[in-house]
Image (cartoon, rainbow over all chains, first blue to last red; front, side, top):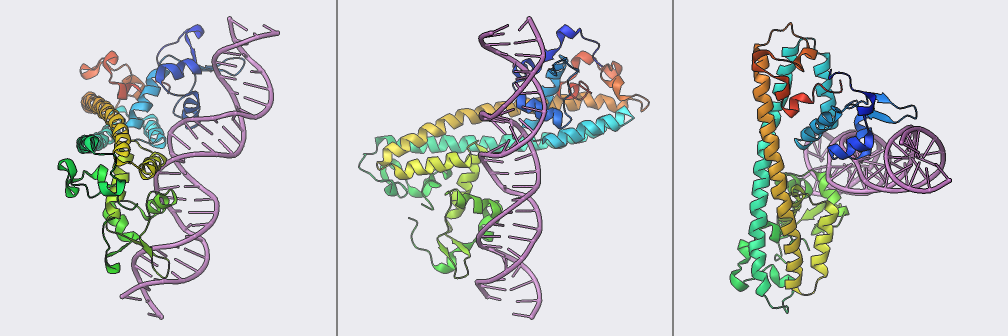
Length: 164
Length: 164
DNA sequence: TTGCTCCTCACGTCACGTGAGGTGGC
DNA sequence: TTGCTCCTCACGTCACGTGAGGTGGC
């Protein structure tokens, strides 16, 4: 598919791991699941990969980040390989990617909310710096000092106190 | 800590699960790990939770989203409980939250890049819709049709072809 | 009594991590 | 020969999912 590459240009698994940011163990697992195959094996059994395998591993990583499981990726590749007509295969890929795009945007929104919550909590805890060391923790949950009102505790701070 | 609540106001695990968006199994696990404790048990052994437990479970969920493991949350709670002086405990929490804020922002950036990649791939695959069904998949990787140049394939499309 | 909820094991899953014991390649 | 890389099992981990078999509560 990508043209022949001189044997000397093939990479061993350690190099593929380094250039893709994955561990050797992870690459072994991808092979077991049918997501990645070495072009050759050396006489001693060493896996030898085509340079294009870096793109494949990055593809796996990206879509894992998007929330695909390895089995889902396997199914996606299998669907694409089985399909005889290219445009039909591409339509299926489009549908899957579109759904995942919506999920990704939802996840970004959730992390944005989390960022706000963290910033709020840090602002609230900033007020604790001026607090005297004599105060005990069980006082914090009803702290009215330094402008703090217990009803205004950010969620990430309130959770520290309830349910001892 | 939150004042007494009439027994009748306590909630069973199913209600806590529904109002926090977690499964009963997950709540059992949090208890096993020391993250969550029922206020009482009924005569028959049913767990009965204080209403403030909802805040505790949401706290766990939020920080799990932020990338904390359950064991890390356990350590965080233990640190806060052990510390005698409140301001010192709050300082430690601040340090942990600040580090996680940086990680959250990095994760948002990564997902933003992923969003772009997905949009790029969808735009590219849009061109495939006008493609004749006679084309085979192995032609796609070198497709020059409909304005497609193989060198311009988005990463999420390119990964479909390499390493058959 | 009927349903629905809850209980405690306990094994399964997913994506690896982490050795154990042995060998290839320059 | 020395190191470093790689090999194949195989068990461990984390956050649950999923029954199995039994019982509480209105």
